[in-house]
Length: 207
Image (cartoon, rainbow, N blue to C red; front, side, top):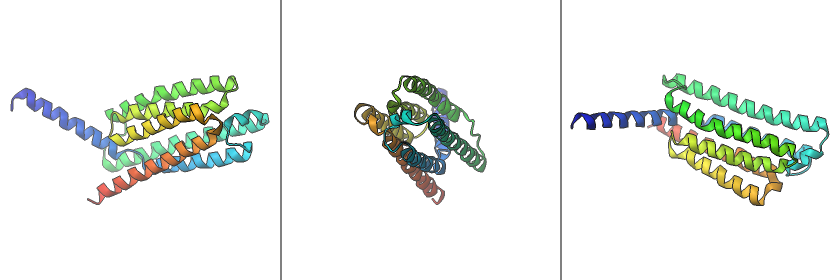
């Protein structure tokens, strides 16, 4: 084996180790918790709006609209915060840095999609098209997760594609059922994803 081949092998081993580390830090429990929070938010939204259409939020009083926005903002903040906490905890347990290069690449890949989703949400809400917000968030989130998954194993990319496809279908055919779309995607899909990651992680720990 010449020097170039040896260096290539070393780079390949390093790449595999980075991907394995990031896979080990993939969220299992926090994805489940986030999914449960999303489902709870959907239930409260239906109770407040008496509809599965987020567009009906425009018919609420100003206090009701503010309350709905605050609730979803709180769900998002709590979901992200507990995911960061669980990831940092897993990193400390494994003796690796949660800010390692693959994790930074994954975060940078997800951030632009979040920014795009925020801008589109503001414009859609301002124009009275609130019913389109959920499918837009699904597609933007799916795009970000898929891009971030390029620095990990296949499962996050599968989740990202599922969000993109479901979001596109929701935007084209089911925009009036935004609450249901949110529950099935940010709720159920996250719970299933978290369970799969948790079970795989548990299985690898016992082998």
